[in-house]
Amino acid sequence: MNWFVLSLFLYFPEDKSEYLPAALWLIAFTILAMLTMKFVIRHSKKEAEKAKEYEKALQRQMAERE
Image 1 (cartoon, rainbow, N blue to C red):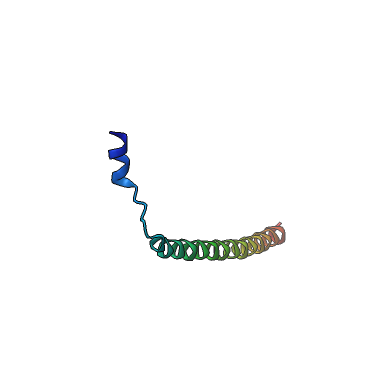
Image 2: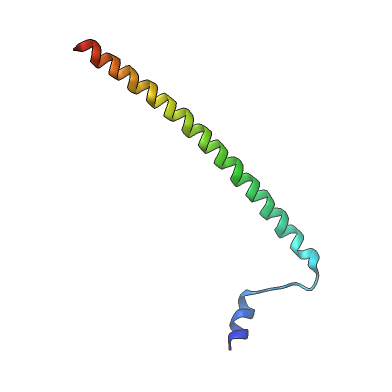
């Protein structure tokens, strides 16, 4: 019974060249995910710097009012 259930989901081709497209897609998506993550981190750092500058400007304004 277990073998039958697993055989519904698992497919191991005899011709190993069928693995090549899947491997290429996996590599491509991994690289794209890494590039996306770098972009998000860079953008986040820039936004954090802008937020710090904005906070400093607000503190200066509050100090001038006092």
